[in-house]
Image (cartoon, rainbow, N blue to C red; front, side):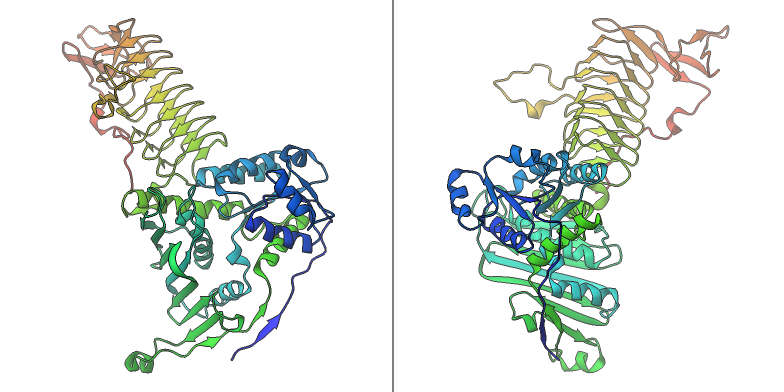
Length: 554
């Protein structure tokens, strides 16, 4: 049975209080819709030529080149952003900081860590943040979600999406970030917003090195469902088709078909006659009221602002989509390597300050904290409950154990490894090359520096590369370490020299009559087995939990 009902989205909102940033192809589409809904107050354009072109179309709308004036205008309560993706983060952050409700075209930005910052800013300021994942507002997709939620298709088994076209070719984002956000958003919504268990992605870069023209991404979910996403701007014809296979039925959403044929259901395809005949199952077109998805999306944003309700595609949804895209991008860079959810940089059980940057592919352990202006690079591994203070840099591949405290203004370069329970004082310096020269790269000759469990390094100390700091040793403030430091040793000066022993509780050890040393706080006894080798005789040091550095779960 087939049929079409036409329905136009209309809504009475609170007058002209929205400014649109951007006047490109998609910006013009948004301008048309927001103008039809009576919300458009101003359009921010890059130059006078664009302003002149739009002035004749929107006579009652202010056309300006000054973003600052628009953000400072109290009559502008909402901002819509339709600019190149690389600009989304800074523009959205500025608009939220100015107290505006914000709509951002997909993708919300280009990194999940930045998306989380935007979502946090919106939550803290009580502002509405919505991302333009247009498919979520397509009436056929709304109908499809309802069918899935009602169990009409049974348990979802596979979801396949093709989004193919010839052009537009991008140079600042690849096809994954340009095309796939819509499909990732839709797949997650069909699977109850759960993140995939793992992601694999492969692609090709023919037009410009490093910018993938085509990608194939596989998402594996914990409930056994698989999703396959194929996107490309190097295809001779346009295809936008989604196939959902369930245990009881299938559905195909083909946006290239006439409206009455866009959503087709296939019921009982697994019945015995269908299995034995090999015949193509008979489809049943769904009856869906026709309406323009973009107009519905714009109306949804205005309604969410008016009602102070959470949009269907809010900031949290934008974060989830970018988590998946970031995992796919990391897999793409690693030639299809399986990336697990636990190996991505974005989890709900840690804290990252809005001013900090955690690159995709970094591992943050549960309960870890990354404070103001710090930067954790892809491939770094931060253990559970570890705290990175203000202005800390962690290079790619650096492992840091659990319960570590790194104070302000510390850089941990490639070659440095911190085991668990280490304390690194403020402005401590690590090196990784013995004889650095600016003219000659020595990335292949980094010297390893190992800081063993429980060691403490005082403020402004310098640790020259190629040394090992022993367990529970203590490096005094301002010391310059040029050689290995024994377990429990207290060293000071330049170059650092040993002046005594400290217990694992940080207390000077006191001599006993039997030749052992005792901690005045804990009562634990220590003995020097050989010159320069001290052990705790009252504790099984090797069995202490947390000795090993954090390891990747990918």
